[in-house]
Amino acid sequence: MVPAPSSLWQAWLDEVHGGFWQQAILDSLSHYSLGLLVGSVFGALLGLLCGMVAVVDGLLEGVVRLLRPVPGLAWVPFAILWFGLNMAGATFVIAISVFWINFYAAYAAVRGVDPEFYELAAAFGHGGFWGRLFKVVLPASAPGLMAGLRTGLGQGWMSVVAAELFGVPGIGARMMQASSLLATDVVVVYMLTMALLYALTDFLFGFVSSYVLRWQP
Amino acid sequence: MSVTDSVACLEDVGLSHDGGQTFILRHVSLSLLKGEFVALLGPSGVGKSTLLRVFMGLSNPTEGQVTEASQSAAGVAAGQREAGKRRAQALVFQDARLMPWRSVLGNVMFGLEGLALTRKEKQARALAALRLVGLEEAAERWPRRLSGGQRQRVGVARALTVDPDLLLMDEPFGALDPITRSALQDELLKIWQQTHKTVLFVTHDIEEAMKLATRIVVLSGSPAGITGELKVEAGQKDPHSSAFKIYTARLRAMIAGEADPGGAPYWHSAEI
Image (cartoon, rainbow over all chains, first blue to last red; front, side, top):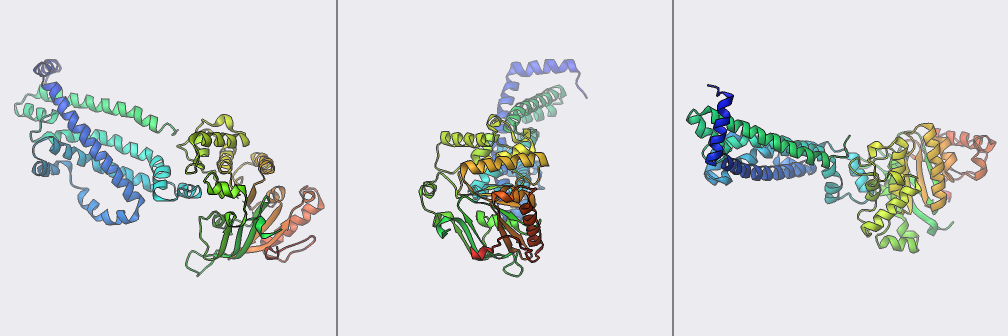
């Protein structure tokens, strides 16, 4: 049952008039941005640390292997158990799915840093951990970090649906309600809304990324 | 020449990466005197760069001792380094090794980060170093926009800006085309005459060593040791002179590890 394009416009207007559309976007946006922030920051930090410090890498290797294949959706019951059916639970699910993308992006980026830059840093008095981190690792792995963040932006929107699947209010929850009432036009309205939001965040991030990486050809 | 003129000194240095099983360097003694331009000549892969890194403090010798300027040479310069405004040594890499994420000026200023200077002072010093290598107007450019010769000039500026007692250069012009190389050699000589830096210049090119250096030290063998050294006077620098040809022949013999054919004064570093 595919809704006619004309019915989408009416469905959207109804959602806007009822205030549901604006509220759903606001709710989802707050889950999304917080989850994205937490997942990206922790993922990238841990990835950097594992990439730089062999001891940490060795210690966490097993845990990483164990947790990595767990899909974001599988965390939903735990999110409900630990945080409840609320904003924190939804944020957690989004953060988890973004975390791994940034973890691996950062890890690979650090491993890809040309070791000759470490020698350069040491030659000019920055051979310590912090010198290496700030003078070499962060700038040199910026392209990989930015690619991870960008992939996470998309993955984050995808997991918004999973995070809100069980009733935390937002776009995903609204979609679930509509689909249970077979209101496919409303479902499509929110699908398009999400696509638009993703396009917008990706577009904006493009500016940030090209500014940070302006040294690249 | 007294010991106090020495800027840096290696005494009976040996270097091994496997705890003394096999040595890369063995029994190397070399003293660098203030203001001299020493070329470290030897075949590729013999350990010249390794020796440079021992001087730089990037590799710790397994045997022997490294004495640095601060312990021997007194004066205002060393006092200022204690105040954190200079560095004892600076290294110019073979591949320029510029950070692509920094502008030309940013790359030169990298040498100064961590020194007790204000941002303004750092910028002024970096610009002065760029002026010295003739790249002041390229300060805001990205390294990828530079030619090979220009990149190497930035590498030289980065080393000069820290005002080092000892300038270490690891085959800096080896990867350049002959025309650019010759131009940069001339410029380096000009800078050396202006700044009176002590230079240790690694090369495997006999002509380059003859053109630049006041003293040539030959590193050869396995484990590598100093197989001979020559002082080069102005009269011997003309490639068409017979003195130049004799010197070149002697250096070839030293590199090959053969007996010195003789023909001019000859020292072993231990005798200095």
